Length: 134
Image 1: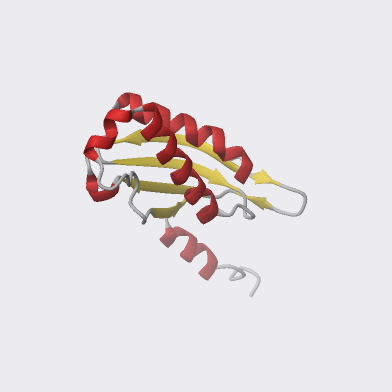
Image 2 (image 1 turned 135 degrees about the horizontal axis):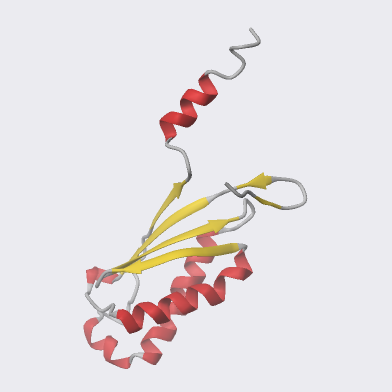
């Protein structure tokens, strides 16, 4: 496992982001998904975020990414949603027919932390710290 670092810390922080189209409209095809991914990859460096994996369904996208501890995740997500919504509607004008009041993304999102070890394994590790030296 390769850890990330900066001047004062070592870390490995993975996140799973799920973004849903407003009212679950089924508007994402491969071309739109590819463009949404390009926009994500363009914006990410400004927020110390590193893209890892992308996939989509007709009404939502899944993104796996790494971030630094100082990354402002909600600021990044809102900036991404705003920019991608504006650009997708401009570049794919046909999509507007399927949307309601010009809304592309739902206001909410799902952001899950993820890592290499299950939570129970980490809890057990922490519970047993220092037992040998006692």
